[in-house]
Image (cartoon, rainbow, N blue to C red; front, side):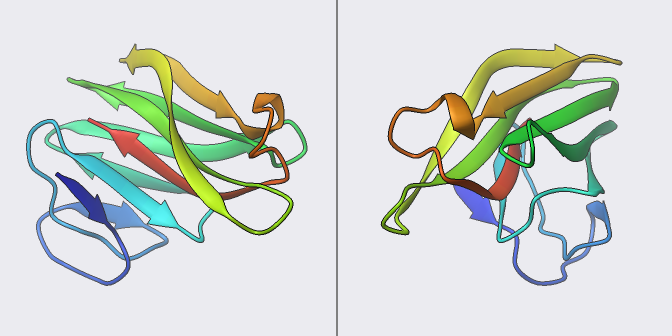
Length: 116
């Protein structure tokens, strides 16, 4: 089940953006956001940032669990698609997805997310 975070909800801390309640193994996406905030779920925090001239989504993971980065990439005609990193990061590690390395959806990073 995927949750899209668009409004404010209780129980999960998000700094700088609305929150949503996540459950174990939950994918949480933030369409329209390219980072600069943290999302905490069940003792694990994903700090979102960008790299590669704004085309790469990066999460730094701290806490007791692990997470994989997700990126919403845009193609030239405006269509978007979500992609997930193959890197699962844990305490102090990073996970990333680079939209510029995607052959079709390589124009812009338009959303970020994490799979806890």
